[in-house]
Length: 127
Figure 1 (cartoon, rainbow, N blue to C red):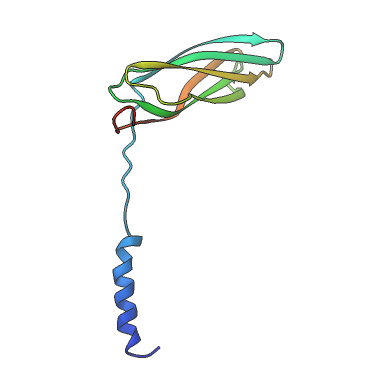
Figure 2: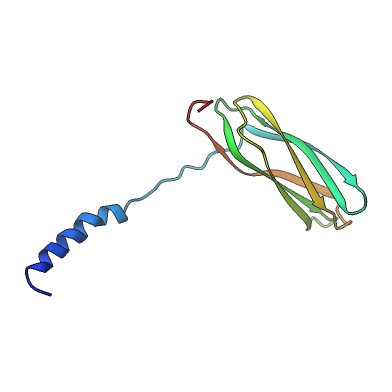
C-alpha cells in the first residue's frame, strides 16, 4: 500500500468507527400495571381452554402482549405449555381478552398463566 493511501484509509476508518461503536441502552419496563384474570375449561380428554383478560392499569397503552400458560403436575413440573397473542393495543386503563388452547397431558393439577412479553407505548394513542 502506498504511503499516500495509508493516511486516507486511517481517516476513513476513524470517521466510520463511531457508527459501529454506538451503544444502546434498554430500560426494562415493569409489568406491575398489567394484571391477568383467567379460567380454565376442559374440552374433551385432551384439550384445555384458558379464557381470560389482561387489564392495563397504566396511563399509557400497551401492545405486543404475549400470554404464556403452563400446565403443572402434582410435583410442579411443566407438562403442557401454550402461548397466545393479545390482539392489537390495550388502551390505557382498559382490558383485552385472550384465549389459549392447550393439548393436555392429562396429569395437570393446576395452571400457571403469566404475561411473557409486552411493551408500553409512548406515542399518543390513535397513531
